[in-house]
Length: 252
Image (tube, rainbow, N blue to C red):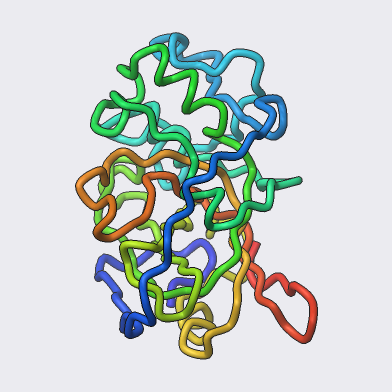
């Protein structure tokens, strides 16, 4: 397993997907959160070409150059890369239910359009929740090491871990929510281990994933087939397990 600071392997690791235990109904009720609570902007004072993409009045994510890969990544949607690559812990998160998470707004016109080209109305609606510290409880249904991505300079900085959560251990993929642990966060925080996470998956241990809300519009064709929403927790900054009546931190 990759240790802290070591390079991630190129191979994709896909663990056994548990048999479906019945479809989980996606909630439709919307919920309200104040835009001032925990929202974070992708401000970058010395990178002028993205000033039009800032979320006004929000604090900037903490970023770094990792393995000679800058926070803007290399190629793809550089604004999206910048948000994926933040390294600051998601403190004081909003604890969301599956119903609330799935009901997060995905406005028309943003699902297949790069973030820097989103229409103004759609941008305002997404920014109600984009970059908000959040946590979600559920069961790990699958684990995988992701492919080469522009945010990680096509593997130069490593590979994301895809941690799929369901409301039950055997939840079908179409009802699950994707969370992603990035190589930058894993290098800074202790405890991230695919082997350990897979043990909790196999034992059907309830987990709590904490990190930053992110609308990943690279996967619009997977919606309602391999995921319940385009919203993710990405990056993941902390993982806890339910152990003897309390939440115990195992990573982050």
